[in-house]
Image 1: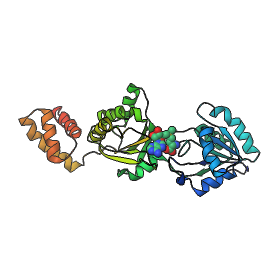
Image 2 (image 1 turned 90 degrees about the vertical axis):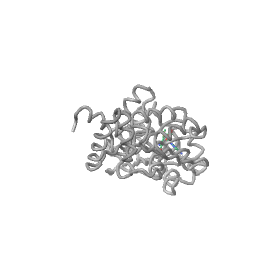
Image 3 (image 1 turned 120 degrees about the vertical axis):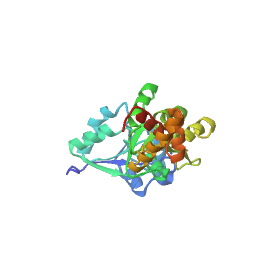
Image 4 (image 1 turned 90 degrees about the horizontal axis):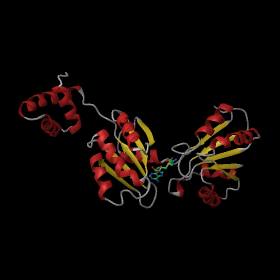
Length: 284
Ligand code: SAM
């Protein structure tokens, strides 16, 4: 909703690696802005000088966002045109800006998105995983306990999930994903999107986890992890699984029965084992 005040905040997406991804509209907006709010003024200064953008630049980051708000509101009141950018990609997506945008919206000033690159969406667009419903989870907590708890909560989510993770934590993160979601779940890891060493890795979480351990290139550069949502067996498959398990459980222990049933029916071992335990517990 745009108010009748003349000042505007433009939320401008910038490249995530390839400078050619800056749209002509983003360029024009940055050149015309009276003020540019940038996460890191030195980093963005290079891009802005290259464009010939002559407006003032001020920093807006995690630690000073709240203090900036009053000044930005005053400038908008005076009719200034202000652009918000982050170091890369779309501001507010695992980047600062939410509190500023909320304050500007509440004050009734104009807010205009200038859309463009976003690593999460770029990765999703080539992941080959269902994209009709997805959830952006960004960076999961660093602390092992909190991270595992969050992943446990997400394990039953049917939507495709998108994560950001740093290279030095990717191996541990994929291991935690295997533990929480089961190693058979399909995933995709996008590395260095739009850059020289852009690489996509696809496979089961077990396979991706092994790659993270064994391939030194896997954990070089920036990474997005996309994971398929959980799929529950349709009713007919469930009946097949139950019938198969009933026979196998008469002949062998539960774990082995689950493994054989999974191979026979082409389903995940975890899923078969879960159902085995349910059957043994007498659940219909
Ligand atoms: N605002 C950005 C966006 O729109 O994607 C995200 C900023 S967040 C601080 C940085 C994280 O985004 C990186 O650690 C990585 O997970 C992901 N990322 C950013 N650029 C990337 C690229 N070129 N390739 C892969 N992942 C990238």
